Image (tube, rainbow, N blue to C red; front, side):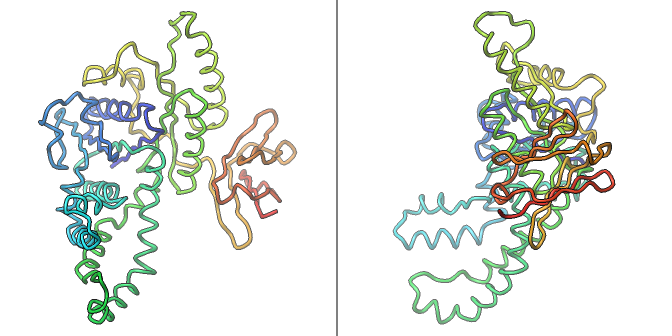
Length: 395
């Protein structure tokens, strides 16, 4: 099974591109599911499914075509299915503070519940072999990064904190509940957490395997959007995911000659050139601005034709390696970058703000640094077997 993860700044059009990709895959005969992982779901709207037919359903997949289903994760359904004990305990604690029943139920929906529920579905479909391709329409970038980092965080908690916490509370609960104004969580609360973790086992392996999962970053040819796309690219790389395409959406078509758009066109062309330089060797695909809103299956098919050629399979693995990787050692960070044809004499590097800039002859490569590395300075670099290794240390 292939997993295609669409992410980007809110409003750039990632839901439309994810839906169009699903339509194209279904046309190729692949059993496809497009799943919305964004709490502010708009996938049903992209297919123009009005009324209560789709929006009041549970989280079950909804058939659009014989080989295409769509799914929006319904958190209320998921609470009943997976989070009953956890939600019940949090609600009861909130009620003791004077919060009304309705407010308690709403506040007990904790951050991350929806994303973890979506991960459980991904794992389930992988094990069942139900689909050939899963297209994940993710939330805006900050939530997307939380989505991909959750498995690692949860695994650390389960290994280092969970056993101690459960054992300790089991020992002190009878005494503490007599004197505490709030009862400590019962053991079935921890049983619920353990069950959820078992349902998520292996999801981190799926997401980090470039033969299974590819990230498609959706952006617009605008300065503010580009900066967020660059940061997102860095953090996906840091979490071990492979970005195989940058989708520049709503690019002004060449046939527009109106004087009103002259400055917009000049700005877009400059930013697109910057994109191609920054993200190389990852391809930047241009998707034109349409004369109408992309809504409904017919217009999604039109968008799919603009995004993919007749011979192109959106699920094909086009990049199996990552452009660069980060490694934390005892006294330094290292950045590993593939430079198969470079020689020592033609490689130069320097740091500019939160970017490491590498020059190879007349070409220049920008590598954005995550927050934890932004204050470090490059101290040493070496070229070994076609791979450049840059060491960064504190000043």
